[in-house]
Length: 325
Image (cartoon, rainbow, N blue to C red; front, side, top):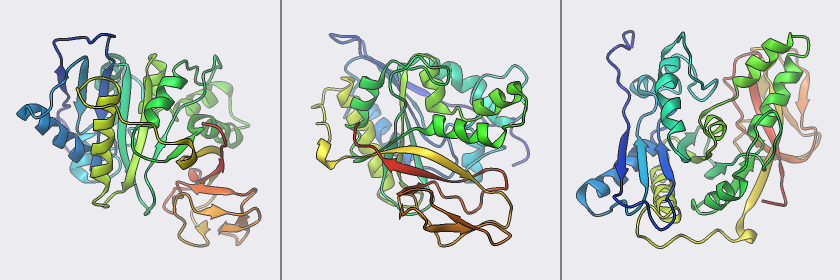
């Protein structure tokens, strides 16, 4: 699609006449941040149909739906329009691409809300999981003060696998990759790791990314729908029983601890890895284009393996089991 000038940005808000006994949070639910990840779009349409028909109503507070966050990527049925919307997300006084223009609309919208549920899917067949933010902290990278609320909601989405550590691990990779670059340039590239959830936390709210399953899995829209309904009920926005928290013994909590880059275009994986495949220390993961083996530095699980990554970009991550959530 060459002409993007006719594409529009769309959000739909439902607001109750009541704030509730305690002010209900302002929730925003998004789909299709990546255009080929449509499970959230379909789940949002299903919930909106229930609200429009009167089958469901917002009893307190408000919820805003963004069914298609990136209309260009969605029209192309590709991950990105002109670039990845879920990186370097911030308002831009001089937008350079279509995603910058989305950000100039989307970032102020996010800032008007308290809680974000961002619905995604992934390439390889695997189990749904939720990505959560950092522990409460006052550090320079991602200060945060809603750990308890964010993780309580995560445990009600209907999945059993939880992953944290994204931005810190990404930033460590940037620091390693750019050790000889000027500090200002380093800070700019670290900001590239900021997506929807990181931006939401910067505004004082909290946020979850739910990876609902493989892109074409017919169960993925159902995972997304269940998560939306559970979120509405848990936050007290609709008159439905609050969902119970997943039991601790059923949970699998993981932390991203290391990112590995694709050094050259000829780097290849030794087998078709999928997220959460287990690896043992010393096990071969791939080979550099000169034949040098790439092995696991420790026992863990692989995450986001990308055989199509460009040279100099993230190739795969490794996670470890985190005993405490």
